[in-house]
Length: 260
Image 1 (cartoon, rainbow, N blue to C red):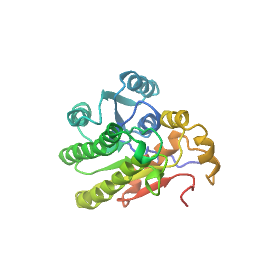
Image 2: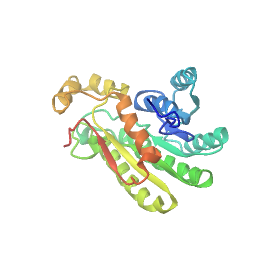
Image 3: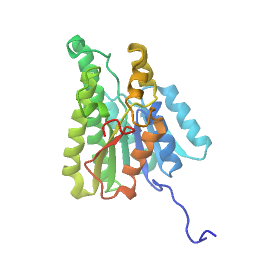
């Protein structure tokens, strides 16, 4: 018989969470999971319709959520989105910087200059802007907290198909480590997840441009399959939770063993 004095609690009970790229894929899965685990969640992305749909799903299952439009390439937009979380819920405890864009696949010399700038603005400058705003908000409200950046296993080795995407994600790994060392004494932990192939709309776009890439990458995976977005979200939720209270500066591979 279960002990009646023990009440199960969610990983993120009582916390306010901010999630970028929350309209679809890993970000949407994370927003739903964080709410189920007890967080009040602010979803941020560029597409209003997607944000509204996920927010309504969370509310329909008893969760607490709201959404705000946010363009990661626009510093004012990023700062306003983070400030909105504090306005709505009075504090910020944790953040998952998931939002990203993919590059057209191919050799680095074939990528137009404008595409490099676009990928850099969203995938590197965006997380940097978000981290600055989130650290300020955590410091001013909760005092202590945690941030998780979404990287990629494509950042951990040569990435000839997505070279600029991989380079930006590797730079995010460096920012993650630097932030972990800088803010650890304040009680702000900073980690990253590095997903392997995950069945998201972004990967669908990659498949359209590189037919067969999903099958090729799946064939190299020890588990023999791609990840579901929620499997990545679960890793992020643990890193953000107090159960990972002594974990900071980690780039956690969630890749089915592909980099083992």
